[in-house]
Length: 132
Image (tube, rainbow, N blue to C red):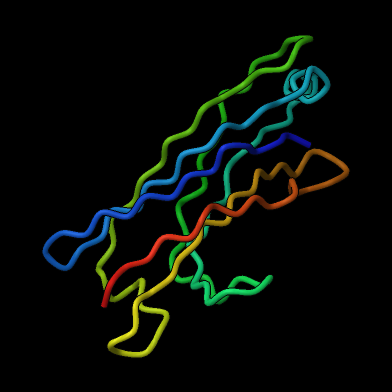
């Protein structure tokens, strides 16, 4: 399956709205690129989760629309940098009680229905905090 590296989550708040920006690199092997020639398609799955520490993410608060990767047929690996953004109301990112900052992480996966393993291993960004 493709690999995801360099995950980065950035939050910008203005006038009750938050712009969520998720950047990462997706790498497709020569084998995965050959599957594209047979009809395979790859797309992203990004979710923003509440996070209060530990090893487990909290509930998904916001999901991005799936976005296809422009993978081409070839024999060597192909690196595709991604930069995806979505703007939501601040209230959609409220995972903690009032007067408590919201700690958030992005979960990034790549999906294809045309392979033995449907999802890549998930990759989690560093934590970002939205002050209450």
